[in-house]
Image (tube, rainbow, N blue to C red; front, top):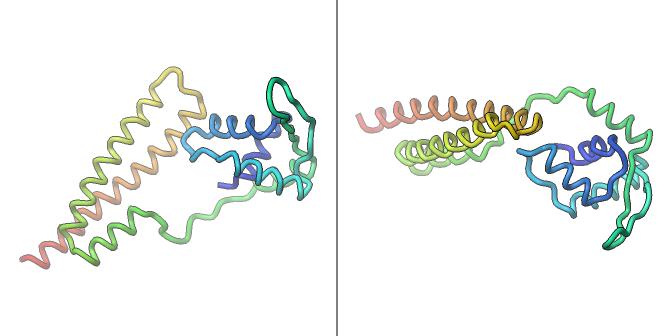
Length: 178
């Protein structure tokens, strides 16, 4: 995920200071990893350096001084270009789940991989239940539901892979222990 582009998108709604940007990020991308304050300020610094955001004002209402930022025309253009780019499918398998199973088979054979896959399937099923609860909660926002759908479909793909791999591991076990 491009934090810079997400922050530019958030600034299209009007000027915000760093704390507001972090809060808005975490609310509007509810299933994404929360962005750290330091990351917000470092990213805003780069965006400001590159002319994509500018200072909109300063506020000291009941606390420390806060600098608000707003998106520039160059920032709007950069955001528009980014939104128009098609994301290429990932060329490599970069899943920790895949790596653990591959290493378990390599190091310990089929039994360890099977035990891990069974435990992982249970963890995925529990996560599916919690995401389904988000989707059926009448207080969930559209962002919450869309994020839950995204996560559910990825978990579903993982679960199909786990089932397929459990079959392959069972075949390997039968070959090794006829």
